[in-house]
Length: 343
Image 1 (tube, helix red, strand yellow):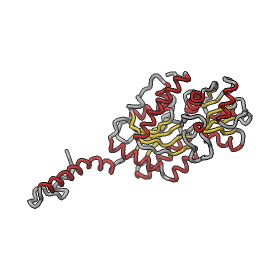
Image 2 (cartoon, helix red, strand yellow; image 1 turned 90 degrees about the vertical axis):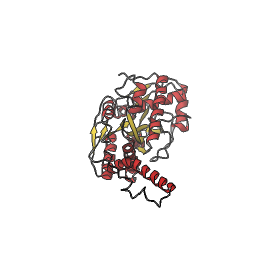
Image 3 (spheres, one colour; image 1 turned 60 degrees about the horizontal axis):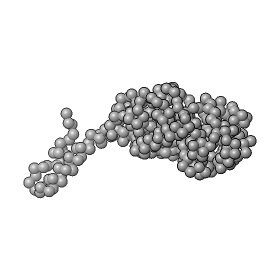
Image 4 (spheres, one colour; image 1 turned 45 degrees about the vertical axis):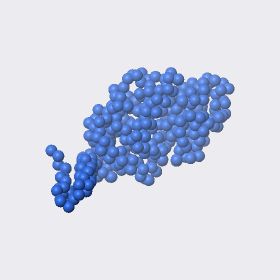
């Protein structure tokens, strides 16, 4: 039953003789417009009415989990409702992402997605969800800075020097990544494609094994996450050649980008929030707006930068366009490099 207030209850008397037809028409149009907006406005005003679940496709304790919990805490303070983080790790983030897609589209479940959200559909032939159809994009939280680092013994200190070195002896210099199909792997293959380099890939199972070979110089070049590399760069055990992101980091504006030397190069390790497909537009708007406001808080920005993440806080439309662009770009790189993940 429609419980919206009647025109009479809103103080509009459509039968008053003194009202001219034009005045009555304008009153009627204004009143019906108000009534049409009322359900959406009421939904935004009352949501959320109970605790909200945030699914995180990573295990507890890491930097990604820390970011999610920070946003959950600040968002909960804003709402006066609990935002409960639920870690659903495994299968290259597929398990957690699938849980988001299968949740009820009522606004009480949303989740964090990472770079695998755009890498998996580009590298895998099948997924238990459709990345472009089964989610409601809310906002891109930010992007972790990917760093191209080298052992001090490597006779190159910048990207032009590296390109010259690799072209002089094709296939000799190897580069490390944090694993096949990770953002660091795609970043390395993109450099090979854009600069026309023959540089074999050495995948590691995460940061610790990669640094075990990078620090003593057994592998002299690597794509890693800047936040984990900073102590080694500052101590002189590794040197930074450039970062992979499309623009200089707000936290480290002195670090050059690869794109400054290789036109068209840009790659980021992303974090963003999505909800299940079918979420009503008014709740999606409320959830997105509150997430963006939370992400832009100075204390949140400061902590994100400390974790090596540049805050983005994009609109839903911008995030949707970014996801589509990244899938297409990664698919193109994968085809050129022959990368494919087994299902």
